[in-house]
Length: 350
Image: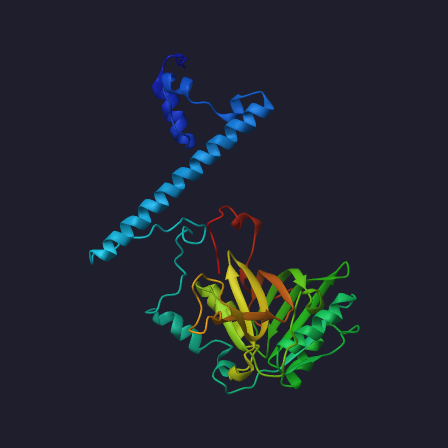
């Protein structure tokens, strides 16, 4: 049998509010607290909300000034300043993962020494990439492929025609290509990349989105023929390490730093952001700070470095990673993304 909870029972209400994550108030406190949502008049509600927002801002500024004063005082006295508070983000509160790479993991290094990318990364083989499309190509597909060719050295483009993908894989093996990239298009827009490592795999299928070509980037630069420097960020797990080495195997391992060309694969929350910058540019600008003048009364000049984006830019999302070359029927998959994996915003796989 059940029983009814009395209205005056305050413990149950406090417990319920704590479970929901809201502050618990007594009856007397509730009468004094006025929330903007409780006011029906629109103008008065807006004024109360603006007042509360201003009070929060003033209180926050007071805390910042007090913290800066305490830090300054500690430095003057020769003491250690108080630790800075680190804001909580989705990245630094991610769920614990056993597959995160560690520097003392001998099994990981053994796998790296025996994987398919080792000959290219040890400079025993020069990477050579073949780029093709799906059977039904679009107008933006060739433009995207021509920009990919400018990004990846030693890359060639061949028209797909009516050839089966397995025959193209065999052709690429005979011509000593180390990788095959297939650009898939849908509704006249590139929407997927299939990257196949040759001759023994693996095969990675990526969803492609947010494609911006070079002509659509404001103040873009034109790429040079120098071999680019490759930057891989936040590939922390074993799967991420494997995907990062896959990207690394597409590029020569002897970058020409004089060309100041940078290609970046930045992983954030399992989305891989691709950017291509031509070079570091050093702009000379006048220092606008007060008192920043030389002996002759002339304003000082300071050098400000910046990156000039060259394009294209796009975002990749790993869908599947398969052992060996492309095989839809008998292929063994290393990893497959499924909808039931997305149960938490703080769970990442790369």
